Image (cartoon, rainbow, N blue to C red; front, side, top):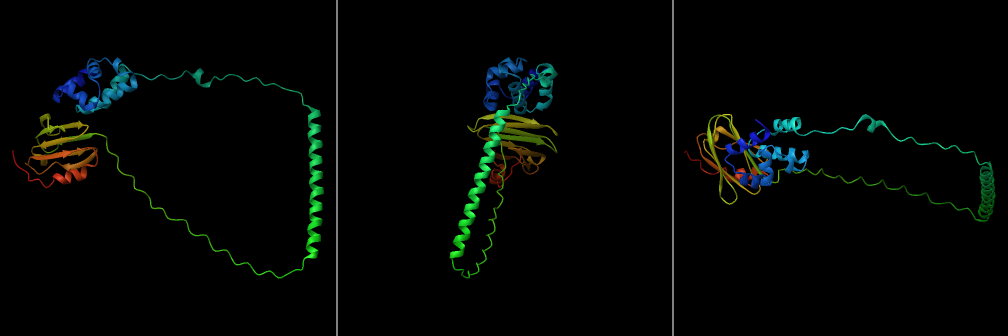
Length: 264
């Protein structure tokens, strides 16, 4: 299948309309429709086309790299400069001039005069210092106190860099040990997805504000939220409900971990 057919079928399997996919990915509907028909002209160039392909693939549960590689092979490409453009450079003409001996002699005379003036001024200053020293009665000077050692530089504690999380909510559910059903709601409590995952199957959901995820047979699944592996979604045979927003998912998971599991 072509790139557009693969993305279109993945969107349909995910239960998303073009309008809903546009809301989730923040990509305009006309661009999504063009990509699904292998028309990448509305993307505005190869760079943006690759970015749209990656975003749409992740939002519909596909691996984006094979699709980007297919795009580079069939549509996109990078231009490289010719060897002559890299190594050729304009030749600079070298102009040879005859030495100006008059200017050189003038500079030499000025240097000699400056040196003689410095020697004369230095000799007069030394004579004045000797005469002044002979008129002053020598006195014993008190020994100077040793200077205190400089204080040690202040110790600056290293600042821990906070972890980086995506700007939106990204939740991936993977059925590891068995089948599981998954249902998702957005920030307006509107159901946006529902399916049954077979063993080994995974699904990625995104929303700019909030995702509420319900998972059946939660002990057989693992959840990755905002790029962090949260482990099993719940206990074996239990139905759990978790609500996530952008940021660190650990305190969010703890907030809902005390919910009593129920069976379906």
